[in-house]
Image (cartoon, rainbow over all chains, first blue to last red; front, side):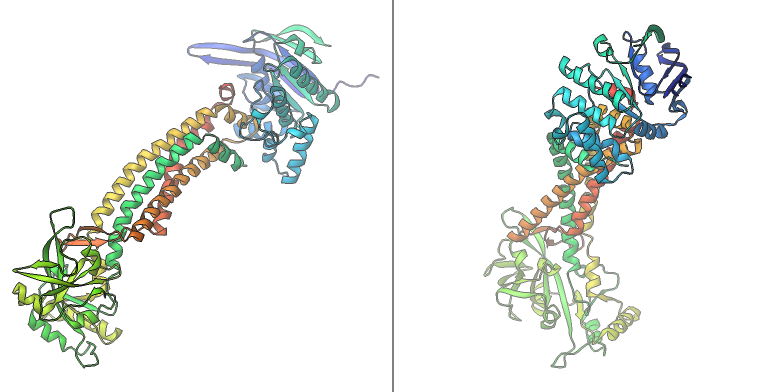
Length: 234
Length: 393
């Protein structure tokens, strides 16, 4: 008998997002439904304005849908208020941005430790987890450097360590290789891929680049706010 | 949980140019405020530092100051035999009938003339004021047209040096000594023999009586007795209380300090607000990132409030230290200030004075400026929509 399919970590149903621009309503997402299983590396692709970043933001709990639901690990995040969302993001989602978004005045280790300041961990535990995360991305020896003393690739690896440090089930990445050279981009994508394969993390990544998309386990294409039939699972 | 303080501290250090200008602006506000307060405080201190709690000063009923008071010789004679008054080793009552006159003298250097207080004192009056000590020359000889002036006053008038002369009525008095009155109101006076003073100015009456009761019970009794005796029509109060009330001169300066303090604080408030708005604008993406990581709006508000208040307090500390340094240097050089006493219309000499309490007040003022000035930018930071903040360059 075949094993039952895994319970999806992300369940999106009839999700719509309409922005108001002056007197005009702009539909960013139109009735999108999808499931993402634990351990998947889902790549969201599509032209500019297709709604891929909006979908990523809603799944990550930094934007609210106009209608429909987005459940992550069974929690309908559209129902959470701002304060609950902030707590939820801290505990359940790791973020990787195109521009790294490290705090320039803090060292790499201090940047990685930031999300842990919102937990009940002791100083010693925080330091230990920070070191583990930095080791995982190969930056243990660069922890005391400030972002401006690191290369782009190292900064993005520090950002991945920050995304990992609270051990979230879901990692979202918005064009994480957009500002990197080919070598650094490859390193970052390999780290993200290995997180899904070895640590069982679920990664949802937005990209324009087909080469980056090739690291994912599934590609989803969005056009004009709707999911387009794509290649599906690899 | 709040953001780590090192985040704010390092941001303040990294933007060092803005930080320095903000600190200097607030330091200037606090320093000016403290200098004005320091002058008012110096005047108050001079009055508050005068007198002996065991002494009673008697003036005419209705008089607010000695210079406007008249006490008759009959009143003096009646009072000196009151049994509450202490007696010295010669069994004389310890009471001094004194005359306070205003004489005009040329200012040193600046030109023009100013009024100064001339006090006719008796030997008893000098015994009653042991804080007044001779520093140079000698005391005046009773019956001679001699005067001893306060050292601090001598520094401000021409002719007040030893051997100089002061015009008093139709005569001239020779300066034979300089005294020091330990920063009290007597530092603005010139003293001569009381009878000689009455003679020069052709005055029958005295201005005031200074006396020492036997003890505290006698003092209380005597105060009540003089006040209730309708025939005497005199007002009696402890010498220290009388001088403590002579702070009217300091009031205009205190008002100016308060008004200037408010006006300049408003300016500093906008400067602090401007700095913090610029800070928020420069760190919009950081704020968005922190919100994404889970930091609450409250944590963001708190962080910017701490940073703005800290920055302003650095200015407050610097301003307080500047004002204190000024005070220390002026004290070291023995520089005194003079102003018109609005009750006697005579020059009153005082020392600019900055106390730790005032410095604390200066730092508190800067904290209020920093906190209130940072509040609107901090709120703006917390209300930034996360997504648009993240997209900020």
